[in-house]
Image (cartoon, rainbow, N blue to C red; front, top):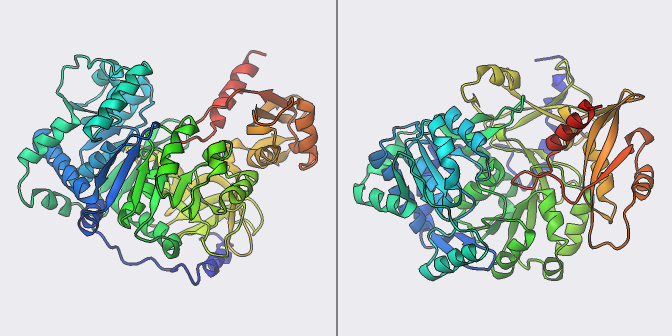
Length: 583
């Protein structure tokens, strides 16, 4: 252990646990994720598990018992009809809907490995992920089958299963949803000739149910070991090349217990969580899908959260107690008159992650809803939760909270030596949620996993009580005349200006200072008057040291975002690179 790490051995954050949070994790409650699913479906059989709601309010619901039966049937389909073996990979490329948990849980029960795939991927991104993972079966939303003739010949996929957005809705709502799709010219493309078996999900479930035998599915998942691979979750990693983080059943089960430990005093059996974040993203996969399923909660699934008005019927019609989201989602909701006039009456709290929560957004959320946004921190490689703000009175604003039970966090400099409390350093993590490594990439694994510690690439500071605050991504640091400028700090200052709806900050080359700060801003349409460069600079000068003040301002109608609404600085940096390469 490097000299100086002894200062962290006291784990000052454990004082923030008592009395609501147990410092020690319980013994594992389940052998694997399929065991968790089977147990929940038995205990909560008659409860509503998932309700998918489309923008016009039409919906469909599955109970825990129905979910159990359908996922059993899909497991049989994979093993008996598709001929898959334990450990084989199944790519699932679907938005939020009733089909997603059926398929995901069926993959787990079959002893196979889930490969979550973004439905909006381009053909080249799909081909890379399917080929890299070695997926043999693809379950895809039927709206995007037109990409498959280009993609499949580059992969080892042997069979395709098609699912609709309104899959498993009652007959009349399903017909209406299909009709609305046609009205908006979202006619489903014809299924092309692919040269391999293609089935609808309903047909696959019927085939699986027909081939089922008593005890067969349970025998399959009983053979799955805690350290077996459960999910290949693709991420940019250290180089930007998409690679699969290998998450085991033990990783995810530990993270479920860690999340539950942080919120157990506030989470009962009648919770109703709004899931606007996509379940194929690790944040919603663990927090919404798995954690709330484990406690018998109800998930309200939003297939498409953009525009944000798509959430209105779900929020108005269901007793939402929890919302998970990112900064842009919370900000967007509070710019909707229907939300600010009638915020959710049953809401306990919101959970923020994925990107920095701006102070102005958090304060306004509290004012509008009367509840807190509890910010946490995580990354794909940690399944994902590393830290979380306690739900009781010790929570800190503008903080990612304290490490979840069973997790050690340290901050180190470029040489790997610890930094003093209050000083920025790279955040490294050790805990049972750390991934096994990157799929078939030992060189990339060695860069981030060292001596049991996962090096996150994020820069943070820790206060004397063990609460952490993310300063920024190490790679996003802007160096102005030798001084470090963290984009999050500048973005937070910009977000406090009412006339700015969204902002992103990157560095640009500068002959005098090496780099300079550039801000990309979107004007708030609800604030009258012109938004000028001079007004923005004056606002920043009132809150920031001179070298942190943006030297250039770029006005945009919108900013590039990921599927979960995270502003993509990397896209803006690519624009900057292209711009300055021409000069």
